[in-house]
Image 1 (cartoon, rainbow, N blue to C red):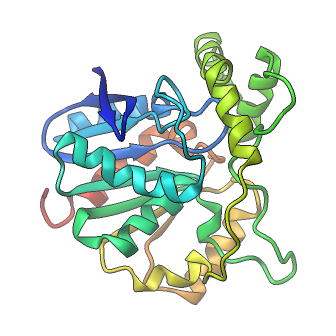
Image 2: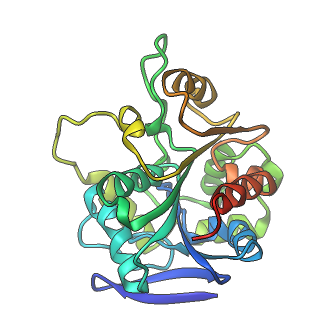
Length: 274
């Protein structure tokens, strides 16, 4: 079901399916991202006895553009959205950049998060000693001088997917619609925004502070040497639960929808449903 709700003075669109413990799904930061990336996951959650809620974050999809384009606002938006829906607590799932939003929520408001899942979040992985970097961020395709063409949108999807056959005409046209107009203007504002410089401990170093159950999922073909960095993180923090999915790239929940949903449901169901 497609719905809309007022959050912080903005009209926010979200997709909802199923009944049961709430699971809030956050899409990534690439131009064209929206709640629609979670359609397959929503169906699986409903079949598994959960209430899945996928939101168009401010400045994406069919939601209004925000007044504040900073990362701290996107972090705070998640709890504001939960408040608007009347959700005291929920399971949080974040893809790519929004995995860091999920981790911030867990660290700062653990009483609001039942369980946490991240998918393809490069900022949660340590750099390789011989590479010294984290690889390209999720916001690829932002800050371009002109609106993307249909071909531009296709190339961006191809970079994020292992299985290129998933880019059907319908998928491509929907993604392109979510990449132009007010969403393109929002991408320009995001590219211009400069966060205040702060000395912060990298999030991957803080993962062991987390008390809420956490699952981290990556595709073996994700960019930025993600698979190698997963192995490094597992060596540094063997208690973390990290799953590598074969034949999947950055959009692991598309490339391996059945496997991803199976792992997600198994994790969410452990210890009984909240």
